[in-house]
Image 1 (cartoon, rainbow, N blue to C red):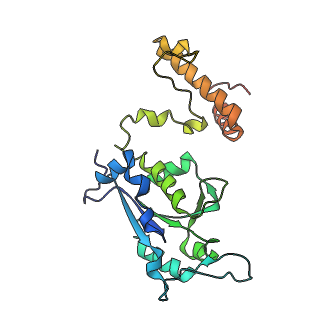
Image 2 (cartoon, rainbow, N blue to C red):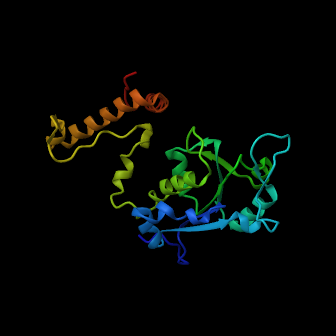
Image 3 (cartoon, rainbow, N blue to C red):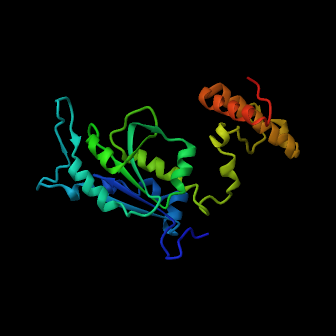
Length: 251
C-alpha cells in the first residue's frame, strides 16, 4: 500500500517546529520509518522557529516575568511559526511536547496516527509562554516523567511510534496486535535458535506445535509480566475484562 491520498500526497504528514531543524529526520530517516518516508507513505516537514524572530540576532526567547532562572520562548514568535505550519485541514492535531502534558501511550499514538496531519512544537529553555497554549489550542503531551534538553528527541519518539502504525509500514501487521500495551498488557517473552543457550532452554510449549497452547502460554506470560511490573496497566486490564464479563482474571 502506498499510503498516499488520491492527490499523491502522503496520507499522514507531520510538521515539526524547532530551533534545530537539522536534527530531522535523524533516526526517522533510517530503518522502516526511513523507508516509508522515501516511499511517500508519510511526509515530514520542518519549520525553523528562528525564521520568525523579530530581531537581527534571531532571538526566540526572553526573560520570564516575575523573575527566575532560564528563558521562556516568546508567544509572538511561536504563534507566527505555528500559523505558518498549520494547514487548517480537518482533523489536524497541534501538539506541544512538555513534561507536564498527558502521558503518551499506545491509545494516544493510535489516535495521532489516524489524523491526516500533526504539527509538533518542540520547546526549549524553561518552556513556552502559556498564552501560546491557550490561543493556539495546543495538546500538551509528555513521553515520560523525566526532563530532556528540548522537545526534539521526544518528537522523534512520538513520530516513530505513529509511523509504524500506518498501513503498509510494518510488513507483518499481525505483529502490531501482539505488541506491548495492546489490550493493556506488556508483551510476552520471545525465543529463537539455539534451543539451548548458556544452560537455558526454550520453554517446551513453544516447541510443541500446539498453537492453542502457545497462545494460552503467551497470554499467561503477558499477564504475569504486566502484573509484576506495571500495576497501572494491570488494574486497567482487570477492570476491562471483569466489567466486560469476558473472563476471570487472577487478582
